[in-house]
Amino acid sequence: MAILMPDDAVHERVAHIYCHDVIGILKEDRQAFTRAQLSVLQGAKMDEDDVSDALKGKTLAVYYFLLSSDKPIAARDLQRRMHISSPSLALYHLKKLEDLGLVEQKPDEGFVATKFVKVGVLNFFVGKGRLLLPRYAFYSVFATSFLVATLMLFGLDFTPTYVLLLVLLVFVVSVFWFETVSVWRSRPLY
Image 1 (tube, rainbow, N blue to C red):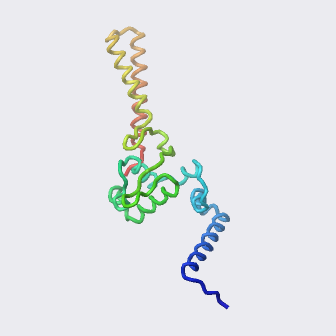
Image 2 (image 1 turned 30 degrees about the vertical axis):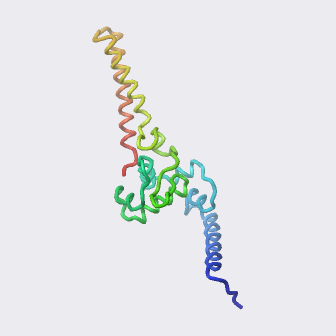
Image 3 (image 1 turned 45 degrees about the vertical axis):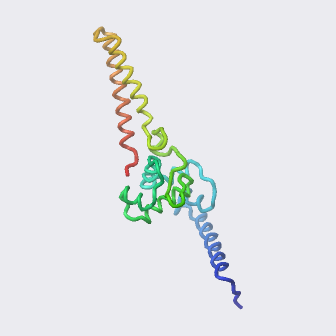
């Protein structure tokens, strides 16, 4: 004897059974899915390791793009500006970021970054909004200013101590600028 239910109740019951089965399968076969995906399905709060597992590749590039954008971005606009193959793929990355709690969707406007997490190469950046700079940029500017101030204060007096100081300062400035440019080039490109 079959039990008849209204369509909405049937769909709701099937969805509940399906989600319960999927979570059961995921718990048994953890190698097939990352901890981040399992946590999202279970509705648990994710820790930093889970976020860093999920934020890689194109998803990290989408997140960086949203961080550096000053206004909400729609999926189609994101797809065009980042040269993603389809709007559904752009939406996939946006939804993944939304599930991680890093972005939110504004009605009729698009997606906007709501939280800044330091994972991967973003560990080396500071700032907010469109102004994301490599952390080493501040050290580079300070060291360069110190070198210029030294040259202005002491002139071109070529005593052995002064030459040693200049060589040391030039070395420090060179290292800091090299690191600044390296970090800047390693940022996610879009």
